[in-house]
Length: 258
Image 1 (cartoon, rainbow, N blue to C red):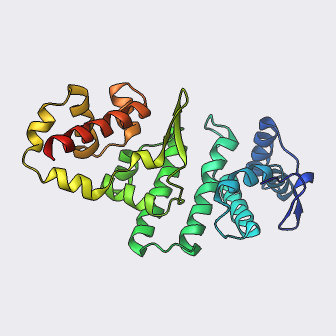
Image 2 (image 1 turned 180 degrees about the vertical axis):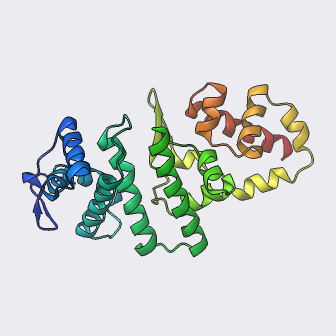
C-alpha cells in the first residue's frame, strides 16, 4: 500500500517529516527536562511515518486504516513516555515493538477472531513481559524468559501468543535457500498421521533404524517441543534442512510401520 499521497486520519502523509536519530534524542531530553508540549508534538509528528510502516502488516483484514493509524500513534506516545535515555538503544528500535504491541492488543480485544478471555489475558501479560525484558536487556527475550517472568509454562505462553497472532496463508514462503523455497505448509503435518504412527509398537524399531541426526531432530521437535528454528540453531544447520530431515524421518517411520 502506497502512502505517498494518502490522507489518513486527516493527515496528508506526503507532508510528513522524518527526524534524524540525534534530533529525536534531543527532543526526548527536552521533554524529560521541561515537559515541553511543543517538543512532544514535534517528536510525534516526526515519527508518524514509522507508525505507517508498522501498520502495513496489520492491514488487509477488514480493519479501518484510520483506526489502526490512531492506535499506532497511541503506541508511539507510550514509547515516548517510557523511553529510557540512559539505555544505548535507538528510539525507533524501541518504538516498533511498542506500536506493534498496541495494535495487537487492539485487534485482540476488538478483532473479528474471538479468543478466550484466559488466553487473551495470558497473551497480554506475555506481551507486557516481553516489552519489559526487551527494554531492560536491550535484546529480544526468548519464550523461556517470558514464561519465567510471568510464572507460566512455556507451552501455555506459546499457545496464548499464537492465539492472537495474525493469520497467514499456508502457501506463504518462510525461508528460501538457493531457490529451494520452504512454505508454511511444508512445516505442518497432519495430527492424524502423527497419532497413527505413534500408536504403533513397531515405531521403536523404525526410530532405531534412523540416522543419529534424524533421531536427534525428532527428539528435539516432538519430545522437547522445540521449533524448527530452535532445532536448526542447536544442531548447526538451516531451518530448511531441519524441515527436510524431519519430513524424511517421519516418512521412513511411516513406511516401516505401514
